[in-house]
Image 1 (tube, rainbow, N blue to C red):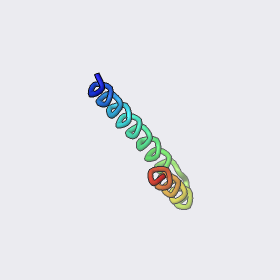
Image 2: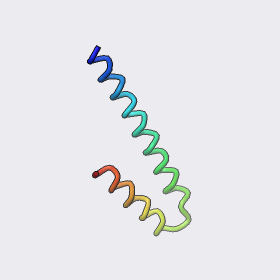
Image 3: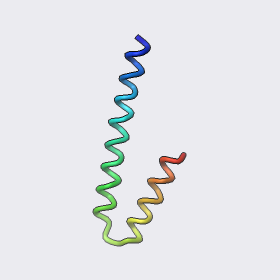
Image 4: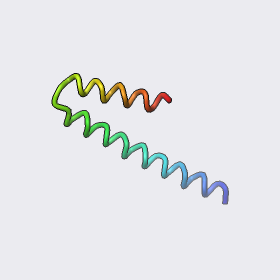
Length: 50
């Protein structure tokens, strides 16, 4: 039972990370200026490092 739970948790985590990555990509693509794209990238990096 524990192994099944772990697999499900990993699947959910991977799905969540994929959604977040797509959201970041959309935000960068939709940013009107390079400065905004840079800020989004910095925030995304900080989020993954913490």
